[in-house]
Image (cartoon, rainbow, N blue to C red; front, side):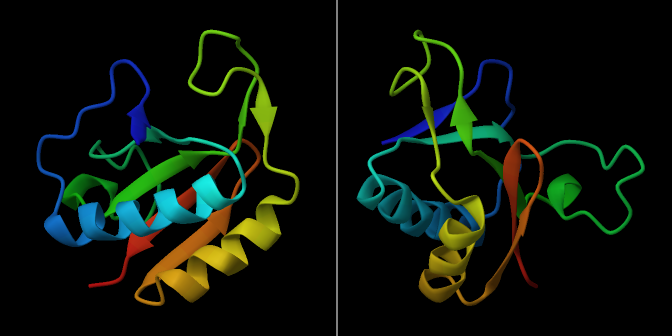
Length: 108
C-alpha cells in the first residue's frame, strides 16, 4: 500500500509516475517498510528543473520517527542501496537520495 503524508496534493499526477510508484512500493515492501509519499505535485519553489510541477516527480520517505506513521518508527538501512534497487526496477526514472527522502522523477 502506498501511503501519503497529510496535505500532499496528487491532483495532476501523471500515469507514468503512478505506474512507477507501484514498482517502488514493491522495493520498499521487500525491505520491510511502507512507501510514504511526502510530496508529489507542487510548484518548483526554485528547485531548478524539478518535474514536481508537471506531475512526474515524487518524494519518498526514507525514515519515520513517529509511532502514528505507517509502519511506526523505521528507517531504510541504506538509502543509497535502495536507490540502486529502485533504478533497476524503474530504469526510466531518476532517483536522488536527499537527507530525508529519495527524490523520484520519471524522465520524459
